[in-house]
Image (cartoon, rainbow, N blue to C red; front, top):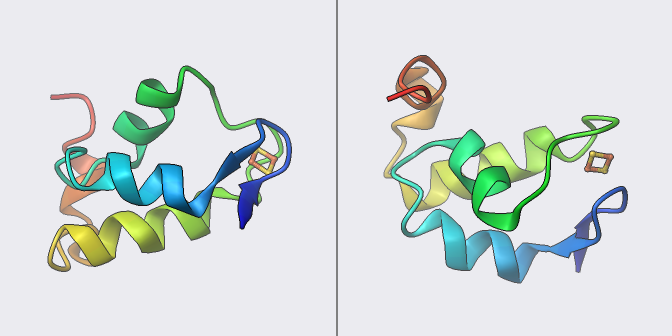
Length: 68
Ligand code: FES
C-alpha cells in the first residue's frame, strides 16, 4: 500500500528501512532519497518506525535524536 503519494513509496519499503532506521523517521526519508512534501505520510511513517523501534519513537526519543 502506498503511504506517500507525493513521493510514491509503500509501507513495505518503509518497513524494510524501519528495521535499520534506529527509530528515526528522518532516516527513512533519507534512505528513500526523498523529503516529506505535504507531510500527510509522516504520521504513518512514524507509526511504522515506532513498531520497529520498540516504542522509542513514541517516547519522543527518535525525533529528538534524529540529527545524530
Ligand atoms: Fe508523503 Fe505527501 S504523502 S509527502
